Amino acid sequence: MCGRFTRMYTWRELVALYRLTDPSPPSNLQPRYNICPTTTIDAVIQRDSNRVLEQMRWGLVPSWWNKPLKELRLATFNARAETVAEKPFYRSAFKHTRCLIPASGYYEWQTVGKEKQPYYFTRRDGQVLTIAGLWSEWTNPETDKPQNSCTMIITEPNKFVAGVHDRMPVILDEKQFEPWLDDSAVPASLVKMLKPTGERTLACHPVSKRVNSSRADGDDATLIEQVGL
Image (cartoon, rainbow, N blue to C red; front, side, top):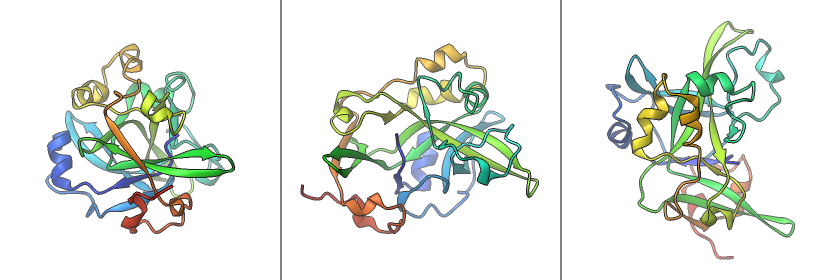
């Protein structure tokens, strides 16, 4: 699973990488070092042939969900690649509303005995990670207001990541952005994209166990610093 990640990228980086058409960023894009599920994150979607950055709840709420949000007790911040095309919570979004989720890095935990040691994964080349995602627009029955939400797709690990954890996010290359966002794409071709990234794409290092807590200060840049084991 991928349950925490970071954001240190700039608006200029996003515009260049995703060829965004927005004249200005939707937020000030301040660094965040411990982004948790159900908080608001950035997602790139396609609207009227234009790529735009939207703010979304991390944890997908299907458009057909007609109950209060507090009754959605499933963890929907990750969707498994093996079942995303068929599961009721994700299949419509997989067919019609896919997105790109930028990240500077993400955390994963290795179980050692009774302890869980966090590791921080980034791209070796220092570029922004692009994670395959799905999104949906849901109308809150309590407020009658629309809310966008999204999920990250996770898959089996490559050999490098398997040394720490048994899952990893689907990381897309730039050449895959267009077919992933194409609303006319054939589902079978999309499923073929849900594979582990190459062995040399990522780097990782151990970090402080303080990141184990969702209450860890999201402004604390020391959370991503390497620690000794």
